[in-house]
Image (cartoon, rainbow, N blue to C red; front, side, top):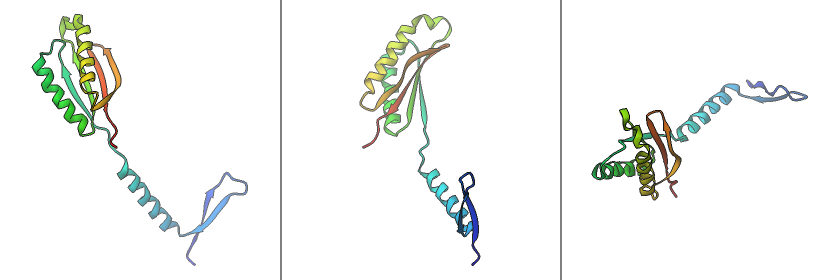
Length: 131
């Protein structure tokens, strides 16, 4: 009949075997994995960089870009970069990021609150789930 005996579960008592066309089984398995791989979504992370004393016009410009990124389904990594001695303005940086989070509430949710790492204060915003 040109079929193969395939051991399905070797650890079971008694071992479980199945009679099937092994080449066809491998083909279908590969096809199933390909379909699953195509369905997975790739996470895109877009970055927006601020200074601790970013002007209102610059802030509005970058906020519009952030809205566009979140609408397209990408995650947003907003960070304030402190150069030199500007680290003394870390409160201003935190206020700026929290203001951004508040302005983008209708487009995304805050995944990680502002957190200082070295000379960078980072915050992650994930897009809202589509209905």
